[in-house]
Length: 113
Length: 114
Image: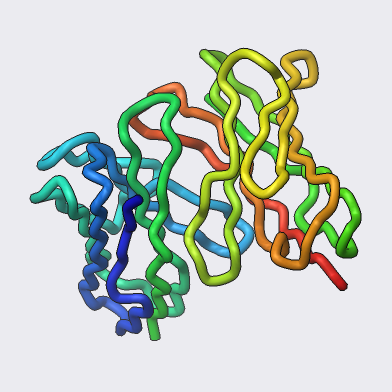
């Protein structure tokens, strides 16, 4: 089996700060995703990537950048953290498109002071 | 567009009870539905999926789900819950743009008491 790791587990930032979240997978999956999870709002897709160096915007991409320089890693940058923001960011990967399940990392919990 | 509705935000049951979590969807394309479980502080884990064939699908840890095209539903069931089943359960439907993966419901929190 494989695993998805996310670093850091907890991230505390200041308003206006640029913050980077990292995700690594050893499944050798082509497709990777970043989701934002807010209490009561489910999961919202921020960015996804169907292969190395591919980047596609999801439903909530404003205020974020992403990077997929290697097949195994997918980074997300909060370009300017918003005061009092609090959310969990989940990274996931999948073998391909269509009928394939997604495998999730444990998440990074962001708090902005 | 595809949508997923989970009518119960929170369900409370006792150990050994059965539980059914409701999921209704709207989707115009080729069906792919799934359920995921999220334990506190963890990522989501895949439970089961349906995209064709027998409308009753079996998943891990005794979970099963039944697809109904007429009701646009994909309800999750377990005959006898354990305290370790306490978690949030998400229903998901495949997006029209397959590359975007899944649209998730808001989740149903299940609390199992001894």
